[in-house]
Length: 381
Image (cartoon, rainbow, N blue to C red; front, top):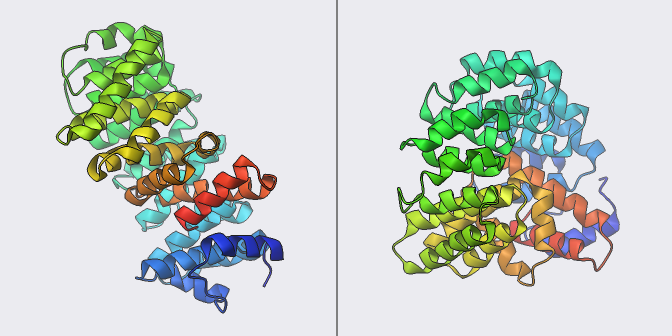
């Protein structure tokens, strides 16, 4: 069977294949993607990831199109998108109207990372009828990747204030991730009024980092103790006494994580630091991991969720940060805990593929290879 090469397989076996199955065939591995046993599913995915692209792509594409097990089709599509190529694009185009919610979610997730202007009319049309809570957020993110298109921008702005709160929250999050300064006024309005989306809007404003929102954010100071860390994180993003506000959020997280009865405050402070980290603040990411490493289990989980999402949204940035840490093994476990709690298989796969690519592209003995090697071991991919 074609592999990446004898040396590559030997290296990966040392770090990841304690459960390896030498006699496993490609067809058997495909079927095992849907096995009830987690270890069997994980080993099958790892086996397929170690195939050459030439061998993996056609067999995965065939499984997506013809396999009788819907979950196998889903996992095959996730792996195929990780390998990329024309087979992946053709496969996602073929499932965009599929009755399997998971397949549609992966298809839209693909186009969120591989935007194609020709897809805009189809995405807008899909948004009119897509009501699955599992799928619509991925569709919104795919559409937001085209927010330089006036029709897309108009639709996103309209959907800030209409529809189900869960879907409105997905729009607000996508606008924050896109640094959508054009959405500043409606986001400020949502952030200024108490309600279920107030914190989402605050976090979006923090990611956008536009100082024009400072007055709206400043008006919230002192209004709600559990909202205060997010307010301070937003102020820091606007460079309003950045050092002071950053210190407040960091100290709040450290205090709340060990207090034993302040989990809402942990979540708020972690979310605020996560928004700063998503905007490129490495000190915020460092603080999140530092506190999570030492935190009790429940508080650690709340912080790990934020760290895991940061890793999925920006794999290269997370890998670069991990290269700087003296406590790599502990930090990698925080990432793993976040992944374990998040139902984001496609984003995990993107992270896996980025780490794998980094492993083979980095020189022996380098920090980049050391980090990738540790992640391969801890995340079992």
